[in-house]
Image (cartoon, rainbow, N blue to C red; front, side, top):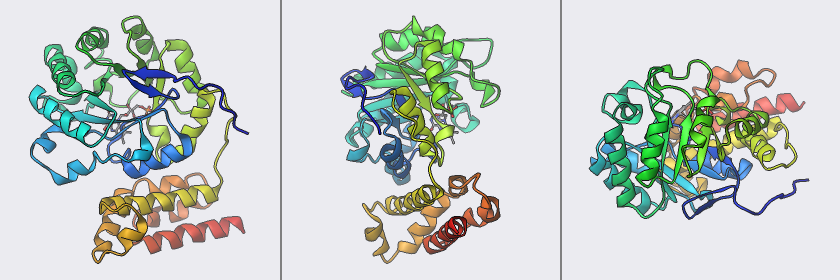
Length: 350
Ligand SMILES: Cc1cc2nc3c(=O)[nH]c(=O)nc-3n(C[C@H](O)[C@H](O)[C@H](O)COP(=O)(O)O)c2cc1C
């Protein structure tokens, strides 16, 4: 039985109350509306973020990018993450994000991939503290919701930029800081160095969120204990595995471990995820609505393609899963997906 141990919020981001210390990471092509709703239902993270949204794309009115900002009432509190290197364009995009109904605007200063950094955005800003601060100030001045920043430790090992930046961002009005405890140059190599999170603790009075390599409830509890952070952000461990989040949430809030999901749960969730992806691709509210559209097949294909990498992960580790992995990542209709997954489940349950 699950018992609620505390009613008090885990922390506050300005006026936004965050009920528990688990934070779902922003992840491109992963943390979309469908996935967030699934995470909310299964794990109820205290706070979730969208995948990053390009300020330049919004500036140029890219329709596809607007879709990334869609907020559902059932997923709040939600932060929309934006990235860009121009203070005015970032401020403009932050206003658009607030118009979509987000509770928080988060600024990305952690993305290390060349296509982002070469435009002076993401982690490239760690090399230009004045511009980084100007962006935070511009965004803070533009919106009336809390503004938060997600950073890496610095560009490379030669510069642990985060403490100085954290101080400057806090002075500029940022209301929370997340540190992915790696340097940009590392990409995802090596282990996250949680000592870096700890060294920010005394620099900040605003909430500090630790991030990097948390996979289990034990990891999350240890991160909080060792670093003094207010919350724990989880990314990769949650991909196609919202149950990992549920277990971490339970550990962080002192509840019983809900354990591993059954194969039936995993299959049903994968199908639900696929239905929502297709519906939201067409900006429909439900599967029934998108099914009734004459152009259903276009959205079906697009939604399933977007999930290509994630569908096989839902059944990873189950006996015989590798035999259908290839076909799962190539499905071109929902019917085909359902047949594959339900067939697999039936064989398993027999
Ligand atoms: C597929 C993928 C996409 C990501 N996209 C974003 C993003 O859009 N914005 C961002 O700030 N970080 C992004 N990240 C980084 C994560 O938010 C997180 O900082 C990183 O994965 C470390 O946390 P983890 O060890 O729990 O995965 C992404 C990571 C992955 C794996």
